[in-house]
Length: 88
Image (cartoon, rainbow, N blue to C red):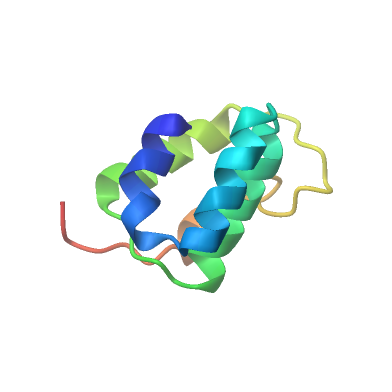
């Protein structure tokens, strides 16, 4: 998760990035993943194919996610809605 956050840091709103690190520091990884996915989808922040792959890998670890985490509970929907750029 830290690897993905580091890669996306320049494209995420600074205020939200700060809250993401708070979730991470508090051990709230599922919450962090859910809000990160929400931000990427809602704001259509471009991700590379490699970043999409990392996100898919992380989402696949949640085999029975809590339905309160809307984005984590719908990995196919998240991946389909991502804005994938051709950049590296």
